[in-house]
Image (cartoon, rainbow, N blue to C red; front, top):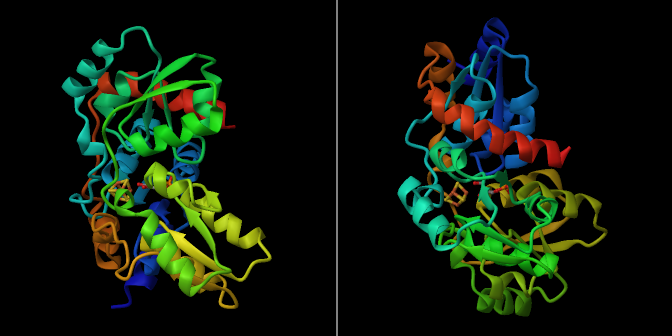
Amino acid sequence: MNYITEIKKLKEEKNAVILAHCYQNIEVDEVADFVGDSLYLSQMAAKTDADIIVFAGVYFMAQTAKILNPAKKVILPNINAGCDMADMINLQQLREFKSKHPNIPTVCYINSTAEVKAECDICCTSSNAVKIVKSLNAPEVLFLPDKNLGRWVEKQLGNVKVITYNGYCPIHDQFEPSGIEKTKSQHPKALVLAHPECPESFVDLADYVGSTTGIMNFVKNSNEKQFIIATEKGVLDRLKRDYPSKEFFDINATPSICQSMKLNTITDIYNALKTEQPEIQVNKEIADKAIKCINRMLEVSQ
Ligand code: 13P
Ligand code: SF4
C-alpha cells in the first residue's frame, strides 16, 4: 500500500488537516498541510475549519489544539510522543514556584501541560516570548519551564527581571560554546543560527537566535552560503532539502535528535486517520482555564 496516497485520500474523505512540527521525520511533510514552529501551528489549529486535526508533533501541541477546538477530533498519531521539558513542571511544582514569588505575572512556555497553563497568566512560544513578556508591562515575571529561553528573553528586553524555573530541553541544553569554536575552526565563514532553548553561554556566541521557523526564514533571506545549525535535526534536514546551493553544518558530531518528535511515522499517521485514534481529550474545567492563557498569547501575537 502507498501510505502517502492513502493518507491524502483519507484527509479528503474525512475533512482532516495534518499539522506538522519541523522536527518531525522529513517524509511527514509529504502529507502535511502546514509545517512550521509551535506558534504557526497553534495559529493554524485556531483557524482551521477541518473536522479532524492530526497533530504530527508532541503531546502538548495536540493538547493545545484540542483546547482551541473542543468540538473537533484532535489526534496525536503516536500517543507516546511527549516532551521532556513540559514534564519538568507539574501543578504542585508550579504552585510552589508561584508561592515563593507571590503577585508576579506568570508566563508559561507552550511546552507545558494543560494543568500548568490553566494556572498561568499567558503562554508564549520561542518566536513570540520577547513580545509576550514585554506586553505584560511588569518589572518582574515568572517564566517556566525553560530557564534558557527565560534568560534569553531577559537579555533581549534589558528592563524586566525574568525569574526562571529550572526546566530545560535535554536536546538543546547540551549545546556547548566549545562546539561553536570547533565547527567554526572548520568553517570560519559559516553563521551560527541557534534556538533560544540553548544555554545562555551558547546563544551569546550565535549570529542569530530564533525559533525553528525563525532559523529557516533567516536562511531564506540571507545572502550567506554557509550555516551552522544549533537545533534539532529536523530543521537541518529541511534546510538541506530546501536550499541545495547552500551548506549546512551540525554543531555536534552526532545529530541532535528529539526521539519523541520522531515517534510519529507515516504508518502511524495512516492508522490515526483510518481509526481516528489516539484521540486527545482535555478535562473541561482545565481546558476552560487553559484557553484564556493560550488566547491571550494569540491576541498579542496577531
Ligand atoms: P519552536 O517550534 O517554537 O521553535 O520550538 C521548538 C520546540 O522545541 C518545540 O518543542
Ligand atoms: Fe520538548 Fe526539547 Fe523535544 Fe522540543 S526538542 S519537544 S522542547 S524535548
